[in-house]
Length: 142
Image 1 (cartoon, rainbow, N blue to C red):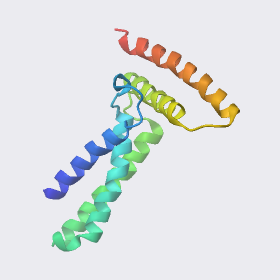
Image 2 (image 1 turned 30 degrees about the vertical axis):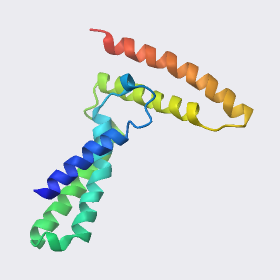
Image 3 (image 1 turned 30 degrees about the horizontal axis):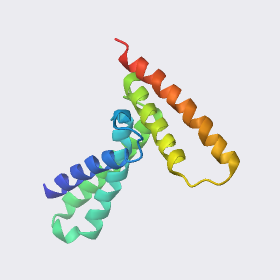
Image 4 (image 1 turned 120 degrees about the vertical axis):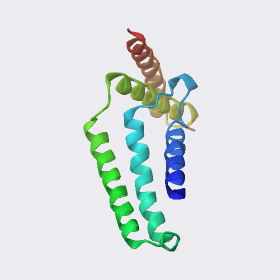
């Protein structure tokens, strides 16, 4: 039970960390895609915990079963993320807002000296502002 609580907490943490670079709070949209990525990060941690702390979980049969379950979760999340199964149009739009916002944060905070990169970031930030506005209109559409 503790392992489940720890891993559930890790999924929540990963969802938060995944949005750490979001430029503005209103750009945060949790989507199925973000959940897939969090599960892909946490499932191997479950396997690692079973391997490193196996003595805390005395049933070998249970450990093998949990390890297999974590592997299935990882593969399922990987396939889901790659194929976008279960990602609705609103999930997609929200994930794209977050993605564009991350790029704007990177450009805004980077210590760039190369004028070509500075010009690129200026153009990219302007485009991303426009694309976020467009995606927000799509999400607001009834």
